[in-house]
Structures are given as structure tokens and as C-alpha cells.
Image (cartoon, helix red, strand yellow):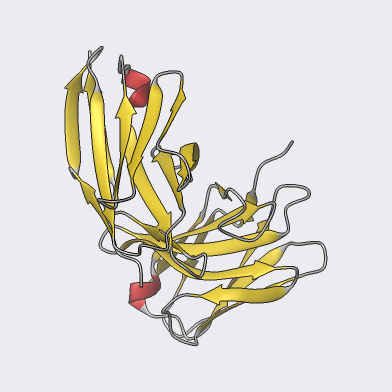
Length: 114
Length: 111
């Protein structure tokens, strides 16, 4: 079974721009969660989507948003990029909503904001 | 909300020795505790997990123990090998099901 895939793998943007990242979960998985990973703050939860509905949200500004489609694929959007948004963005999928379902991570999208 | 502390931040062990990483959590309602291994340039990989109704779980050279009373759980790796070198993260879910991760432990296994 194919794992979680994320596109693109690398992205370079400039301040003020917006970016959209994509995540395809493991086949059959209905929950998708997004995380931001930085050396200083570690792994921080952004949001979780289950059956197209946002189920949980972390403590990030409204510039960070997401959505999930009927096929469980998910996208996250960051508007008005800031230098501090440079990070590895990880997507994780699970069969059921957390914490019932075990989370499996994708390889991440490395975002660099210049 | 949930707060997870992880120690040590770095751990250097000789090949063949055991490694132990400890995490403490604050939310008594937490009921699921996974451990992840992250190699350079890759996403975290789930290596073992434990739920609050179990005290210990083992999978080959890896084991996890949970002490609900003390609110701490530990990862034990026996007979370490060079391929065990990576960053290890513990996590706990809060009452809303959100994951809170520890800061990570860099494990270096020297031959």
C-alpha cells in the first residue's frame, strides 16, 4: 500500500506571497493532520481534517488554513508568508480520527521563505 | 492543554548497548502514546505505540512502558545498531485527540 505523499517536496517563496501544499493520504484513510516542524519549536500541530470537516485546530494565526476533499486528499494554504514560516510541513494520515487512529507521516514539504 | 517533556535531548550509546528515552505528560486524560523515529530528510516513522489500558508493549528490540500514575512513559531500545541512529519523538494525545510532541532525542549509535 502506498504511503502518504506530499507535493511539492521543496518550495521557495518570498515574503508576502501565498503557498498551497498538497497531501494524499494512505488509501482508505479518512483523517489528515498537518504539522509544522522547525528546529526551534519542534513539531507543532496545525489542524486535523476528518471526512472533509476540520476536527481540531492548533494555535496558529488565520493565515494558515486547510481543507479536505471528498477523496480525503488535503491541502493547506499559507497566505502573506513571513520569514518565520520557513519550516518542514508534515502531513499525517490515519484510518480514523485521532486518537483512535494511528498516524502515519509523509516525507514533508520543505518551505523556504526569502 | 497537554505538555510533553522529553529527556535526554541527545543520547550517545555504544553499539550493542541499550538506550532509554523518557517522556512525561501533564494531561491525565491522555490515552494514546506513540513513538516516532525520524531520519534525516524523512518524515517521522511510527515505531511503537501504547494505549493507557496497557502498561508495557514490546516489538523485537523496542519496548515502551507507561506509568499512568506518574504520567510518564519510556522507550527502550536493546542491542542498539548503527541504523538506530536518528531523532526519536514521543507524543501524547490530549482530551481533544490532538497530538502534543516532545522536543525529540538525537540518538547516536557508535560502532
